Length: 250
Image (cartoon, rainbow, N blue to C red):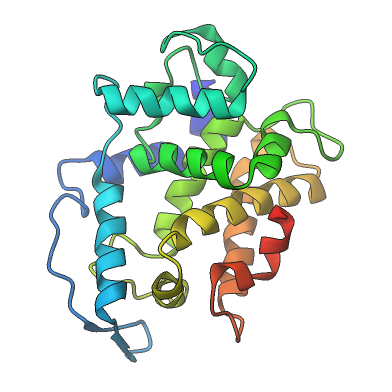
């Protein structure tokens, strides 16, 4: 499974270097200025609420998953209960975790790329959009490939893809998608989490449309990013829930 990740989703290990490396751009926070510039040199003005929410999101991104922390262990157990409500939670190291789409018997080793926020994203998805979560977890829609993408690892990759796409490593985003995201964050404190759920649903739709197999995961992830960027560029989008793809969650 490790070789699968390296070849098919190389972004996973790239993510590990960026987020956890000693020179991490997230490792040293700088004060957020209320006025910055985007890639077109247009001023970005943030209200105090946007500043606070963006700062809180960056703090979430900085947290690494720590398997020795009881609260992190409890969060992982919570994810299992949400995914399999009628089954007993297995030990934190068990072959059963592979059923959810982790690499091996110890899920804690798979958060290197996305950090703790990727676990929070999965839990948010399961709690707020349980039908969509269960559909993707169990691959119950469409004609599936013999070699499917592993659900949990795909979720970690999506978290990191969004961080890249929205330019959230920066003191303030400069990409078009990132600037629009700041606007949406002012309307919805959980904009990132909701966008994550949309992205996961979108990735699965792209996967089915392309009749993809595991070797094409990077291509599907790239297509998902491109579609998200197009939708974020639409006019009259005041909330993440205004995005056309949000309807796939309902």
